[in-house]
Image 1 (cartoon, helix red, strand yellow):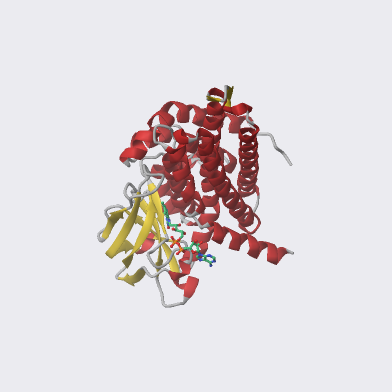
Image 2: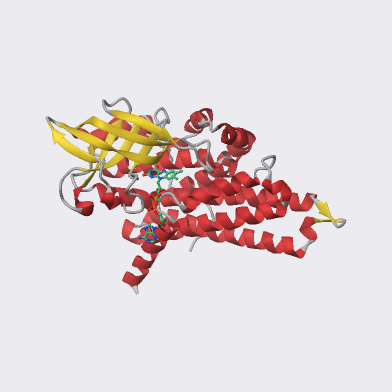
Length: 383
Ligand SMILES: Cc1cc2nc3c(=O)[nH]c(=O)nc-3n(C[C@H](O)[C@H](O)[C@H](O)COP(=O)(O)OP(=O)(O)OC[C@H]3O[C@@H](n4cnc5c(N)ncnc54)[C@H](O)[C@@H]3O)c2cc1C
């Protein structure tokens, strides 16, 4: 097993870390406070090739591997978790299904503008009545005169308010469960397609989370992604990769919290000594560092498997990485806040924001309970 990062991996870490320190960290608190989408920062990240990290250069992608992608999301999230999820949802959830399941015409039409960052993408499977159970999807797609007419709505869609392109799951025939589900590419401005409620959130407040509404929405038949009835498979394939992105986001938040807590513990004095000299604080630092290291190894291992193996092999690792990294981020951000004492609880310092931002990583792209279902099913099958 190889534990060293290549020169390319180190370069992307350095580039994204510098960007996070100079462009994201100084603005993250204000963006969070104002619930302001980081459009300026996303445009700059696009110039750095971060809006199409793993996709081929022929589609304007950066042509890098999934470890580079995980490192990019980790470092960006270390600076601003809202920007991290914006990048992750765009790359993992919108670009990925078009790249892996689109026909050549669809790839040529959509990927170049998405990879260059000229367009932003989103992915909609969740509905009011279909969360963990995507097979409960009720948004309907009916074929009529060469167009699919979509009716229904999607909830909690990341990048929903800013997306130019949405990849959306709908029920296109009467077959029960997953068999009747089909995926569609829907462009902003399509008749009958609108952005609905904008969510007010606990954390990642600078990210856009909205409802998508389809009211007799007319989608050209050629915008069906993959084949009819393949929608659920595309969704599951997409979420596997997405989980590496969210694991990396959790990792970045945890790393930021630990760095701040260590600096504070060295500087702050009580009882005539720095906090870092108390064994109770040292134990928290040791636990944080161990959690982060384990999360990083699992995340990079899952990313590496995405580079080199098939979905049957990497699905469990992606679920493990997301489960462990998100729960580690929960533990680490709360310990880091504890080290700050009262100063951790007030908004002058970013610790309370780290806790709020970390919490969602245990919920979206499959809750921790769903990750445990995926892992257990795989273990029970293999042993
Ligand atoms: C900020 C944010 C951004 C999001 N972005 C997107 C996006 O871009 N695209 C998108 O499609 N969705 C998105 N989501 C939706 C997200 O993926 C869902 O919220 C999540 O999958 C859980 O679904 P739910 O909220 O309906 O919870 P439910 O499915 O109702 O679950 C409620 C509770 O029951 C548990 N539970 C459910 N089923 C089981 C089971 N079989 N066994 C054990 N426990 C179970 C869950 O783990 C959870 O604890 C986003 C959500 C948020 C909050």
